[in-house]
Image (cartoon, rainbow, N blue to C red):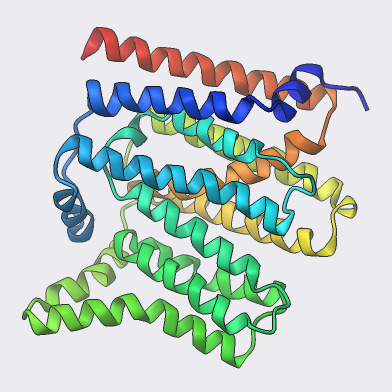
Length: 334
């Protein structure tokens, strides 16, 4: 295979992650602290309550920053603990930071960062359940974080069957793990029911289910250009990484194949959710970004051909151009 010099230098460089984190933090200071982008009011009650709880643009943006920092750390730990990418690398964290850097809409205070963090925590517990004699404990933790995220983003309910399928792929689905997972998902709602019943506000308990049952007509919500651009990058990484994996699956260990198959399934499910219910596109995208980063790092860390080098250069240059465009808009239009 041809040696992709630029791709290899960036992917394996020791300064890639520190430089990316430094640039991300600098842009956070610009977008969130110095010239903050105002957040729009959300119609869903729990996201609105979350926005009120972190009232103040800087305080809310700080919560988002800490949540994304935790996601970056967990992406590194996911590969170190479970060898998803087969080689020891932190490029998945850099790739996630790149996607956040160009997503100026993610610097707005909102619940999406917490949903993304809960989702990555659920993946961490899910992967831990692989052929484990303590699968019930890990299933409980996984579903607890999914249930918590579903309070802020009820469409997460639609991922529940996929996570059950994932437990089956990991040979961890049996009566105890199924019941433990069901209990883990129910715990946040049990606490919510207690609060709603005690305070006579049962409408709060019904709110996630009403939001889940609310479907908009297909393609009825236009996506802003920044969201559309990042979504296309994420889907492109997902598609190219999936094709590479399917052609080179024999090179991965059985355990890594199970992890990658599950990530690909969840990634396409989130992409379809954002496509067919565009009112959820931004939240689904924030859950998709860690998955796309893991799969994209698997592609760029293991494939060194002319095509992968060209794709990497295209991705790198386009990210740089969009980041510069966001800075231009910040300086001259705000």
